Amino acid sequence: MALLIPKIGAARFDTSGELRFAERLAEKLEDNAIVWRNIPIGPRGRYPDFIALHPHRGLLALEVKDWRIESIARADKLRVELITARGIVTVQNPIEQVREYLFAVKHLLERDALLVCPAGSPFAGKLAAPFGWGVVLTNITRRQFDATDLREVIAVASPVAAAASNQYSSAAPMLRTRMTPQP
Image (cartoon, rainbow, N blue to C red; front, side, top):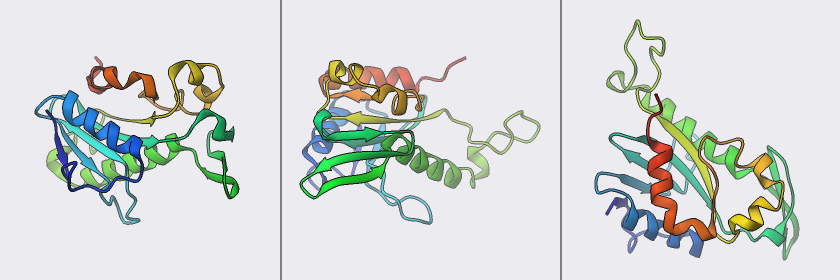
C-alpha cells in the first residue's frame, strides 16, 4: 500500500472522483511509492491533485477531473469549455495544467545538486529521474473517450495516457508501466 500524504481521512477532496482515485492509488501502488495530495508547488502555490514518487520509477503528476462527456462543449490544446449551471465556463486544458505542475516540481528538485545529472553528462543539470504527467477522467469511460476527439487534445499531449473511469482497477499497473524508465 502506497503512503498517501495527507492520509485519506485527513485530506480534503474537491470531488468524489478525487477521493475514489486516492483510495485506488493508496491500495494499488507499491509500498515504496509516496503520493502527495493537493500540496502547494512552486512560487505560484499551484495545487496538483496528485504527485507520486517511486524510488525506481520516478515522478508522476496527475490531475483528476470529474467531468462528464456531455459537459464538454469544446476542447483544444489550451482550453476546455464546459457546460455548467452558470453557462459555458472556460478552463485550462487539464493536460496543460498538470504539465505546468510537473515542471514546477521538476524545477524545484533541480535546485538540489544531488538530484540532477552530473556535469559532463548530456543531461547535466537536469533531473536525474524519469517523470511524467497525466489526466484521470473519473466519469468518462474509455469507450466514450475514444468516441470523441479528446485524445487529440488530452492524451496525445501527455507521455502518460488519460485514464478513464472504467480503468480504475488497472490504474496502478498502468502507472507502474508508465513510470518505468525506458531504455
